[in-house]
Amino acid sequence: MKFTREEILQIAKLSRLHLEEDEIEEYRESLGSILEYVAKLQELKTDDVPELQHAAEVKNVFRADVVEGCDEEVRHRAIDNFTDKEGDLLKVQAVFEGRTE
Image (cartoon, rainbow, N blue to C red):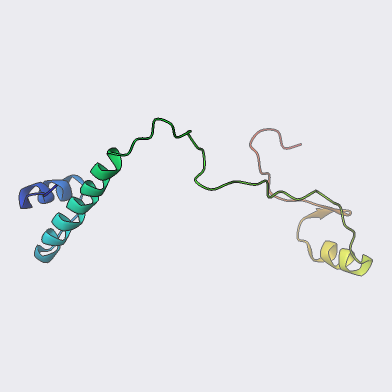
């Protein structure tokens, strides 16, 4: 599908793009080839193709939540260097809105 110069200028105006003179011809060719490719894709028979949520096989990438200890000295240094704490508890910014008890 070929676009006219006026159509490209109208699309640019609607998209709020300022095109230089040399860009107008480039956009005519690019948009035209994109729409030609989409038209080719429309010709494909996809009646027997199942719908997919992802193009590639998706696997669960979560790992088991395992508590691991650390060296006691490292633990004390982390607690001592934390800015807002109460005893051995570290206060952090709330993640969810709502109750902040």
